[in-house]
Figure (cartoon, rainbow, N blue to C red):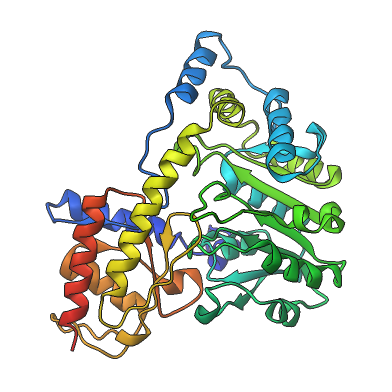
Length: 400
């Protein structure tokens, strides 16, 4: 009899972390590797946020806090949601977690029973299905088509809902595609959800402020106020504020759900890091001027990568509305063979051969639930992106 829990057999390690780790190992071994797999900005945390953390340390704010966050940060979340999204919440409706991932995990752990289904559009962030499985639920995947810019259509959402559906996970702009839903596109989805009152909405808004070319972000409870009482609006400071390592996420929703999430957190990690909470308070309340500056850099990088990838033989790369990812299709390369004899029969084979033969690390599309494609994070220098895309072009041209 195995000592380990049977639950572990239901989940797999994060493919994005696995690829980043492999790329790091090759680089440490002396190979010339460019990793485009990690989903974090290459910018440093802004100085005024770092200063707030230092001030908190000097003020002795290093003790335990309430299990799901300090009152000041909860109020800042309420103010942010009112200011940016037109949503009204009280601190009792807010939970602060150790990163956005814990917020999602707590909500699933607090609500899922055996047989409950969670509807997840694909391509999806790699952790969604496995968190559902860990919580005892069943992930149901609804594929979005490349010809629809990887956005789920209302009829596809309608067809995927069953009497067992408990949650619908929504992510815009998307990891891994960068696709962002317009107000009208999201309204079409919320119209479907209104017809199914047993389905709750988990909106992952982590890339809210990473929006380009005038794209206007919107979130489900904002677009359809009638869904307010069954929506958990989730966000965090990781991406827009370049605070991935600080590990602060937050969510706002019904008091009963937030209380259940608090109970889970109080018996697992307890409070998020106290210093990181004070830094997050400054991130939400302080100057946001740096976001526009960073987005200008991201926009330039996105355009560079999209143009260079679309110049590759057999690759088609849509131009996304936000985040810092592109999700090019390699349908035109399936069945070809690399210069070193690897048959490109899947996107995983493509990514493996690309890394071993050119030193470029990307994440294969199967990890995100929709093939054949791969994800590139362009949150790195222009020079590295040009070098990597040049290698990808040469790799594609060498396939026979």
